[in-house]
Image 1 (cartoon, helix red, strand yellow):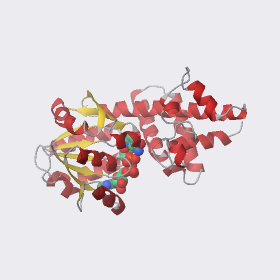
Image 2: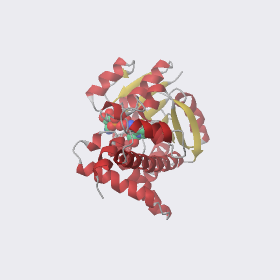
Image 3: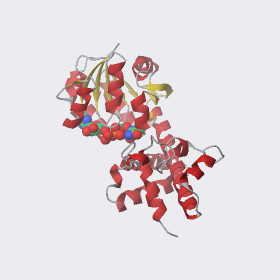
Image 4: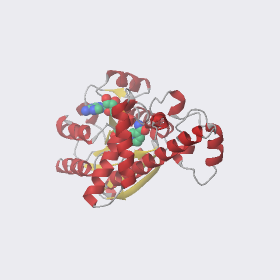
Length: 298
Ligand code: NAD
């Protein structure tokens, strides 16, 4: 069993750290929000007063923060690299820009640490149930050291390649998910106008060629799949502002790589427009865009 420092105990980090405790790992946790520290302590995580303290006397430090800005702030400005022993493995599970991920690797390496970018898919349901998929970038040594701990939080752990490769796979995944979700939302909006109930559309399409995870696993209207955010007034789940962030990452990577991704660009534009137009939208689950799609008239 490993000694782990966990930094960032939000919607994802809190259940992930809790699962490590359940699997028998010794986990110290830090978050800048007091409320999250209290919840983590209830889940058996030893709360500490700083990121640096979380990194002291552990074998592995996991960060699960909103964006690359916070990841780099933790790596560069919180004293974690000074507090950790040489050779500690730093895993960033947040979804961040490929370039920022590579920078985080460089910073860790210069301080004599091992590092891995290991973003996840599976959402809060996967974080709660320890069924996440981890997409990892970094050396084979870092990956093999991380594997037993990642397996305590997920069902599938994949080595995608060198530094930044995990983030590259992740932003492709999220671009595909957003495009699928908007397609599902448009299908429900059209079906409603044609007099078809949500349940009827779901029952047919979820076993037909129009099916996708966005429909059968993350249905954006209440009713057909009781566990989705749509059934709890779109409490996240995955906040709209985080999906907009990921779509911005995929768009900047598309530009850098010289690849046309017009569907991804459209999904980014619609979700960004929704987020800017509707009060409260940034913090709601991104599937709440169903209500926005529904009211947009030709
Ligand atoms: P969140 O905002 O709920 O949690 C992030 C936590 O990080 C917050 O509790 C915040 O207080 C903390 N934090 C920020 N800066 C910090 C710092 N300097 N030191 C310590 N703690 C700090 O977000 P989330 O939904 O848990 O997402 C975290 C990451 O996982 C994001 O990059 C997101 O894109 C990614 N992700 C989320 C989901 C999902 O379904 N929510 C799914 C896959 C990936």
